[in-house]
Amino acid sequence: MKLTFLSHSDIARRELIAFLRSKGISNEDVLRAMGNIPREAFLDKHFSLRAYEDSALPIGSGQTISQPYTVAFQTQTIAPKKGEKILEIGTGSGYQGAVLAEMGCNVYTIERHVPLLNEARARFDKMGYHSIISRGGDGSVGWAEFAPFDAIIVTAGAPDLPETLLNQLNPNGGRMVIPIGTREVQRMYLIRMEAGKPIVTEFPEFKFVPLVGKQGWQ
Ligand code: SAM
Image 1 (cartoon, protein in one colour):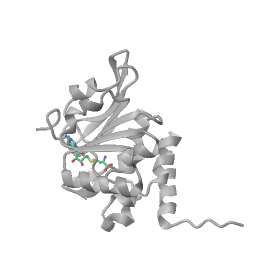
Image 2: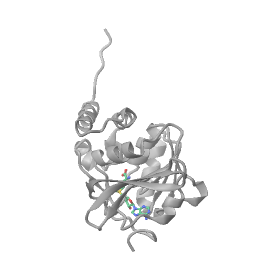
Image 3: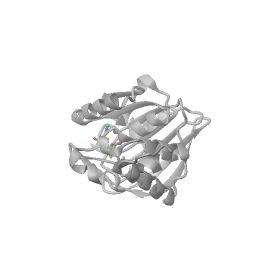
Image 4: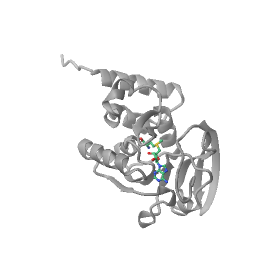
């Protein structure tokens, strides 16, 4: 009989996936991707033991890796499909980008803090996520060169819907998930483009670090 040995990380990840299911995450592709990715690889080693808590954790430059439920919720909301072109605003640790790459998406990600971007790039290289294209700078204005995108995922809280990002969505079926509100608390929104018109769905409250930029907080 072939025995399978599970590490502490494997067990903790299985428990996290069961927790996400219990909270209403039902997209099997999202759960599979998150079940395959060691979240501790996106954290400073001091936080390794907390990698599978459902909490946001510090990643330096005053920023955080989003809590696993938030990553699962935002990803499920845009329902990415294999081969789709997805823009992420706020690379942070790189974890969300890795989840999208693990789902077979072509990921474009932008981070305003260059030290964070460099650390995320090193993780992508080490873990073999070669489909992720990244740049430093203000992502609130999107990435016109590669538009239109099948989906845009904004992982920082915006004061309003950034018009430029909306214009970079595929007009037929493009989706954007974005937290909008005050600096302290935001509601999550899904904007789905149907025949060039945005259809808006509102979700409950979340807490994100601010989207700082031309189409974000000044
Ligand atoms: N998605 C990240 C992850 O998986 O670790 C977590 C993102 S963290 C909650 C939000 C990130 O958005 C921060 O790293 C912050 O520096 C970045 N950010 C804020 N405003 C930005 C902007 N205008 N352009 C690009 N990145 C921005």
